[in-house]
Length: 213
Image 1 (tube, rainbow, N blue to C red):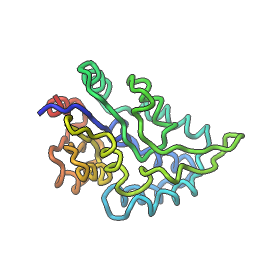
Image 2 (image 1 turned 180 degrees about the horizontal axis):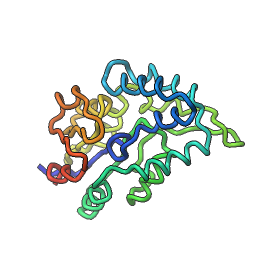
Image 3 (image 1 turned 120 degrees about the vertical axis):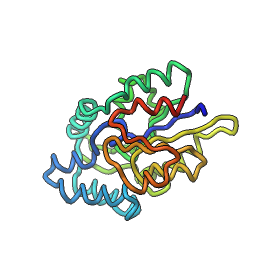
Image 4 (image 1 turned 180 degrees about the vertical axis):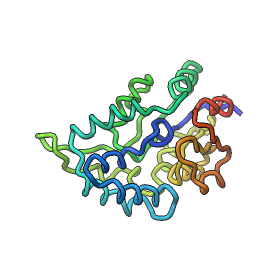
């Protein structure tokens, strides 16, 4: 089966890190944030229950977001550049759908030749001096079911849609009719392995091409 529209999660799928956890470590709040992130990704608590709490504690400023953008690129998952290059060369519509922070994700997206319009993530709002003000609280990706909602918006009756990711929020894309490929190369989550249409345990993303093409 070949897919026309292909969506990727970002944290622990395209980059080996969880951005919010790295920001928390930088702010001296690491262990508590990691527990909250794991609870959401394993489906133990809804995303919206922890999203605002995490950012209110960390208060990431513009400098922190720029630091995270560089770290994302340094920690890119093996095979990502090749996967994106192959898909785009074949004319596939490729998207990033993430509950992460847009300003930190977009630099890697540009590096992968993905237009900003194909990045769906949560915007951070800064004050004039670059300090943290808020995040886009209306963004569906800061809530449970958000990825399914974006997949519905991207779906087309004559085209096939696939979602690749590591967490329970990615698994929700199946609610929108997406074929779901679980990626366990960074973190293997039992709920994802159990319910994915296909599961990749390799540390490289390259095996996804055999499924997508």
